[in-house]
Length: 298
Image (cartoon, rainbow, N blue to C red; front, side, top):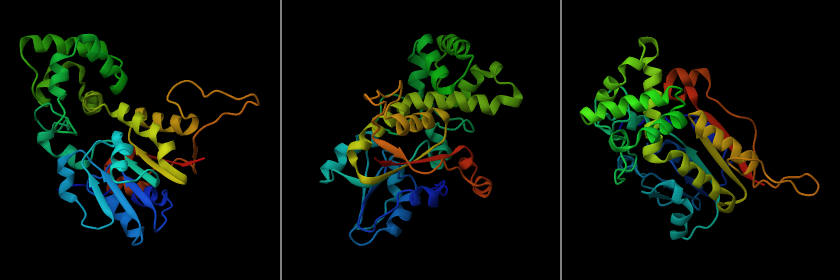
């Protein structure tokens, strides 16, 4: 399987401050790069659980008695760890977004480079696909998805164009969608705009922001005292949620202050924001937008 080298590998695993006998979770297993690095730092009594709902990732399973791979969405992290008798962990690592393998597997429909079925499901059992969204969502619903998740200013006119086109013929493939929207794709910006459109649809298909929120809300109860959270985000929508939750424990609004003007926030940030070096970006283009944030239980 073609899984590229993990982004910010050393930095994100260093962030966990690994104890040899600790219990850790890699919620985005993918090619297993982060998991292998964590295992290399654990002693015989350490344990690592990993999550990945994509069956392709299970071809990379690591044969190690200290390791368990769970084929589920990481929004259910606490529930599935309890199944293994684990209520608290020493660290959780999340490398958000789509793996290089998913982008490179043409038939999955994640990439703008290939003509493929509009799929984009990370969980192949899910009923909601990109094709369903493009062909059944109402104009307003479609416009909201493109505006909120793709940050596209002309979301309304894009949605209207899609709705008009599908009345003539169902839009089934990525190139068909590209053709429908061709007049909004000026040569110089075609790739950027298409990437935003595909990102918006992909986030909706996989409920990525809802999943991230549910996951973050479980961290204060799941982490041991001094437990660490290490999160790599690739676009501003995810990064904003992570930053906000670490700072306030909320996703909107401000936390309430007590009589003395103090706020009670469950997590505390550790160090500064970490971004990849120029060398890493040169070696792995996917790293260019990565941002690593670290937090610990207060």
